[in-house]
Image (cartoon, rainbow, N blue to C red; front, side, top):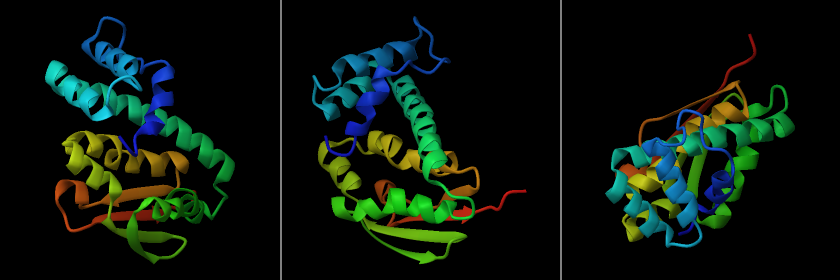
Length: 179
């Protein structure tokens, strides 16, 4: 399934501490790891939901959150300049999205910017595969930890998403100067 291949490397890392061996969540993550690149991703995710219910999304969501936070903090440490954090984030994470089918406009400046996404190929793939709630978790829910991990001076908010049926996604970023 497109747009989730970046999760594969997360499965090779240690699972979050709060999911020790023997827990349902650890079992979920093990099943995800063992089925990754072996089973159709959409079918694997649907199977996790059927077998484990809500704990499947809790475990996978936390795995993604921990790893996105770790990776974006490392990226931000390398690429976020003091005073240019928001511009650096936009350049690194937003600019490449057009090339893979996202359509959006933006307003704002180096201290505050809002993006209005009107076409999202992740949402389109989710609709085709019947994995909308999973793709929200694996894609949309990563937006806040991505921004704040990239720089502690970036704040993120959103009031609507295409994935949840809104006419657009509104990603709002605010650069907060150091205290």
